[in-house]
Length: 428
Image (cartoon, rainbow, N blue to C red):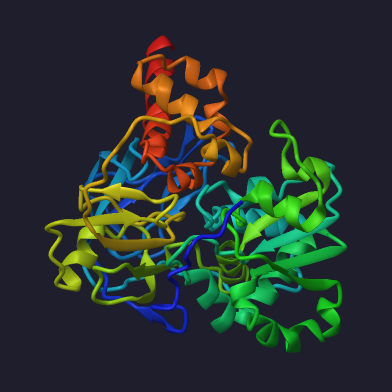
């Protein structure tokens, strides 16, 4: 791991704000392990806010709900920020905010099974980026969970959305942790934060003193990147070096992002499905920095128009500057795993040949050889990419950040994964 400039001061102390809804939303249906949610609406249908528009099949991936009321104008394949195509439900917003009738919550009487069912029905997916269905993660299949880690280690530069949730919605966070741990029954509940956010300990202290949270503790981790990665976090908290072939539950650990936990609270207490999330809007070329609650499916072009931004000579990134994706299609939407929208000045990077310094290997948190991905991708030897375990790469971009020759390592990795999937699909 390594230290990088945080660049969080522009938004860290800003309260979560609401944002004007987009006139058209593009809701991508999630895909997990080859499965995709199935649309339950048709073109021309009128939909209400919170209405189910796509359902999971055999628990995978997460359900999707309409963020607004309006009309389904299209269901089509559309490009996403990760470079893959996804079935997308396009909804024209009527701005009437007509809602489906939601049942009332009753947190005290739910069994563990019922809580998992509520989490699944609400379409809760990991908000740290992976978008893995929370209900699947919490189905333990007989595994005993010893440590429940709530990931507040927001290690990417610029991003402060998780910080804002922890600072402003602390009550919801702790109650959400309590609800989740009724399922997991972990004896050790750990909230992780970075050293630069140590002041959150004062915010948490009144809650930690309550009897209901007596087995909760806060762990302050160094300001290192990518400290917030699941495997890196588990190692930092428990000391366990988890093999890539295992799941965290296999070693008695579950990790959930703070945004996911707040969504669990909202689903159980208010019975609200996931239709929005908190993101950070920032970057040197952004005019309206801050943390905003935005609807899932909001296209990036909406922010550009709303803030009156010119995109000439600018790079727009969906996500963080390290693991996010540069986009040029302004209809690409915010998804459940999107953490930010960043605007940067476009710069021409001078690329040089690899000098075999090995820095990329030194900083790789997964102990991979990133230079081999670039070499084999450049030569068109795509199947060799898996020989070097490209699927184990978490795309943290630490390798490219440290590279003195500016070799396009992360581009080779991301494009290589897309190419491998295309080749695998062609073989099937």
